[in-house]
Image (tube, rainbow, N blue to C red; front, side, top):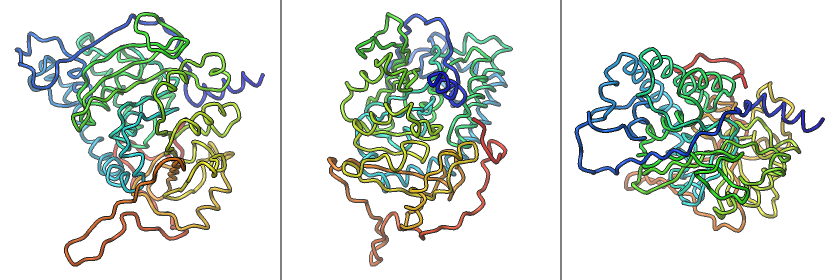
Amino acid sequence: MKKSLVLLFTLLTHGAVAQIAAPPPIRVQAPGPGSAPAPASLLTPTANDQARFLAGLSQEGSPLGGLARRSEFNAHAKDLDATWADAEERQLGPIRQWAPLGLPEAVSDTAPLLYVFSGPDFLHAHTFFPNASTYVLAAVEPVGLPPDVTKLSEGELGASLRNLRNTLNASLSFSFFITADMKKDLQATKLTGTLPVLYVFLARCGCYIQKVENIWLDAAGKVVTDKPTKTAGARITFLGTKGKVQTLYYFSTNIASWALKQDASFLKFCDGLGTMNGFTKSASYLMHMSEFHTIRDYLLTHCHTMTQDDSGIMWKDFPREFWDVKAYGWYPGPIPLFKQHYQADLAEYYRMNEVAPIPFGIGYQWRPKQSTLIYGVTKSMVRKAIPVVEEKAGAAVIPSAPPAPAVPALQPAVPPKALPVTDEPKR
């Protein structure tokens, strides 16, 4: 009975895992930048071409240039440009400026990043942690097939791009996906699963996709490409913004404790990555429940940093003999949907300490000056000094992250441009 209730809760908050026939292994390889160009009309679109098209970016010289002249693409590109510019100004840019100051150990580290309950949110993983050698995302949403816009009929292109924008708008406006809406939007057209969203985020983050594969994990946690198993995933190799080769893994898997006991392939895969950095947000407070203690304990014993909002690991569950934990921003408590997960000890920390602000919103409390960010570093890791910002000659050196008043006043936020403001984002 208990297992059934946990499964129901997981489905309601994270969406059901689609039961679809496993696709054959697919590999898409793109030539590297600088290769001798061929006439665009003679080329087959690469994964990088497909990603730039879905992201509404320039198609000059692309095999998809003709398709990009369609009015549906132009409308898609215009809408995404506006939404992205708003997100860049309001959240992404401030995160990139603040993260090296507030999370210096994690941001500069090239160790793999483990992001659980992520959905296809490569965007925030890359924005916070641009230097990770490997990104591992895990959620219940299905992987799908590498998208191919050339296979969309004339009537399907507009609807597919519109549904993709609907999914992206929620993440760009609120910083998290509305799972039920995402499931509906990405099953309504031929752009199915999480791969179309991952493509958009990679392209818009300035990454160049080299290779895309559908993969699976065997019982030992090894990657296989020719034998479908219960744990399906995708592996994307790309050139990052600094010209280094990086890898993104997305796995569709249930990480409730009972599910991991039945199939530990995902954790065994992660074991092979060594010590990682951890990240999670908008995680439905699942790790507050005993039914998700396995993944909680795994993060605490296999990561040397942990960055999260208050919906991740409970404040009291960080063992202080092994972890140094601090918080940023403010703690207004959970939104009403999750009011039972209020943490009195976390509220007391904010009341008793001068907590530095964050210049962006994140998580369910996505409005600026209402967001909570928790950062833990294991005591075995050498701490890095927080950088300072030097003013012009003769001026004083100013700390990069000055403390905020103990009880900052909440201020009304400017709503995002992409979506109308609602009091409580649905889950």
